[in-house]
Length: 339
Image 1 (tube, rainbow, N blue to C red):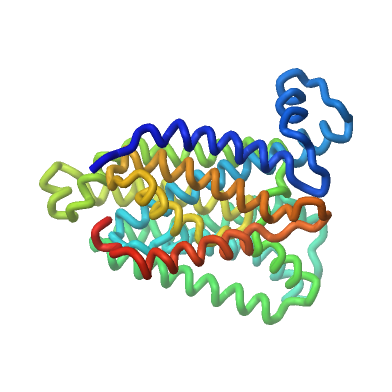
Image 2 (cartoon, rainbow, N blue to C red):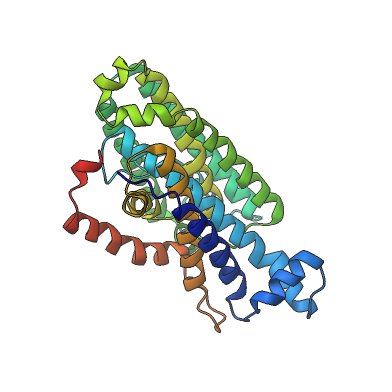
């Protein structure tokens, strides 16, 4: 089976073009040449362009790259470990835990009859991280007690359902203003982070990606089943812990900072398999990371509604693009040959 290594330079080129396109589009069009020249030399044709690029569009584009990489890597891990083509980075309920933390912050006060003031992006991210950490602790406890991977998957889904039920109760008793605030957050956003938060998110993605580097051979062995992987000296229990930690950092961190972003983690690994014609994770992990970053940059560019002041929620755009991809994969391909 051909690995198509020549596609990696093409993917990096597309990533660069997508990054520039994302910086250019918005209520004000900024030419590519002005962006490149301004970023390299620091000399901008207009002071307003410098403010727009440096303070808003550049951090947003970096967040799109980080989130695209993190969701794609965590989705590929889930699909391979659980041998489920429709598994995504949210199946263990960790992202739902981040949503619970944010819901408690935004909705609990309103449900109890008092309003919280001073809710900012730092408070939202902190609440999301605490919620994700809480559910991650619960999943880790289950992983320690349970040996079967399918049981862990079911328990993770139950954690997600339980958390969603708590959020629904809070939403029912909340006031309209708090409920609207939470609804807007749940639609996802890439543009609400400052440079300090972008740096923290980048560190989270880096830390979450490190376990992937040490697990590539194990994931390849797992393609032929757990028994074969064990015969090759792979510790399924250790691999499970690495996967939980990695996915907890990647999916939980992204949800805490950006809100839930749908379909990317499910669709991108399959796109990588189709593009590179390979099931080798030495190819799929970097390939998925590149495609995820490119796709989320393009989704964000589409959501900018060029020439208009309005911006579509990123979750709506990824769902509009990702859902048809998943449906077409179900209709046209036999998933079993990839797992």
